[in-house]
Length: 184
Image (cartoon, rainbow, N blue to C red; front, side, top):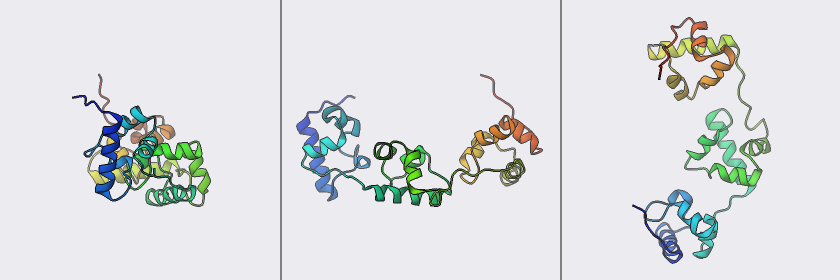
């Protein structure tokens, strides 16, 4: 059901949440006894403006703090983080912060340098075939696109398609029985 708010109610919710937490609420604290972030944006223009209206200090990370978050994520993943990797990490600011402060996530990654976060790995066809064969042995069946995309240690399915033409052609090159395609 749609809930109606006033600016005064929203400000009071933010103040209570800040008192409960002992700090300024982040966007990830919202929705738990307070309105969702979009509600604050609708009423105040930005979440930061809502925080200022409530007399709270918005969270602003410095460029070095943002770069350090990216370095840690690169080390954790062994590759540059994707937008969803950043969005799904509760310890990182949202991807929009990197886009706002650097222009894009790609520019933020460039700012930390390739030594800190190597570009996506390039594989040979032989390496990709070996990965598919090992995955098939590990799971006891021909790996599906879902099996591959869920495995963080493997390249994404589109990488196999780029090298071999399609996922099924990659499977065939690895000596595996291609999956049946579903007709809709």
